[in-house]
Amino acid sequence: MPRKIVPLTDTQIRSYKAGDKPKTLFDGDGLFLYLPPKKYTKDGTPLPDSKLWRFKYTYEGRARIMSFGAYPGVGLAKAREKHKEAKTLLAGDIDPQAEKKRRKAAVVRERERQENTFGKVAMQWYAIAQTEWTHGHARTVLSRLQRDILPLLGSKQISEVTTRDVLDALRLVEARKAFETAHRIKTIIGQVFTFALISDIPGVNSNL
Image (cartoon, rainbow, N blue to C red):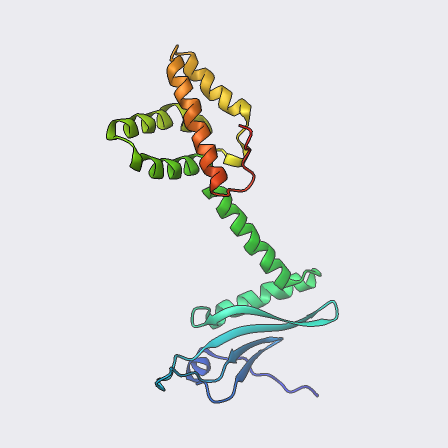
């Protein structure tokens, strides 16, 4: 008959101390708290104890262990919440560890997407380039960016800006009969794309 596991309490968790050997404190249904052996600095000063949440489960016939973070950053209630979510995924025949990695990758992709708008890249280029310009020229370029370029292109992913997008921006300037300004704006846009290529921003079209 399996040994009955008494669920953990916050009081118990706080009272447990790391020792010379690792400890495993079970909460039930695969959820446990792992305490690595006590560690010390070179001069013998004890380091803070680590208390790490783990979930042991089986998926497709293989035993796996998933991390839920460290206590007290992840408290008992939060660890149980993560455990419940993982069990729900398993019930749907989804590996919770693989799903965690997929979600993390999606967050990274979204962060990169937000950071790589034409507007963000253009201002990064401007911040570097303007250090070599006169104050007056820097002010002119910034004005052209803010008035004639960013309103149309700023929110677009720089990797998704097309030749048609650039032409649309130039046509609006040419409609004011500001042909010299349109030429300058085309140059600025080209320099932003060159900066993006040098910066290895994914998917940037070198033919624009």
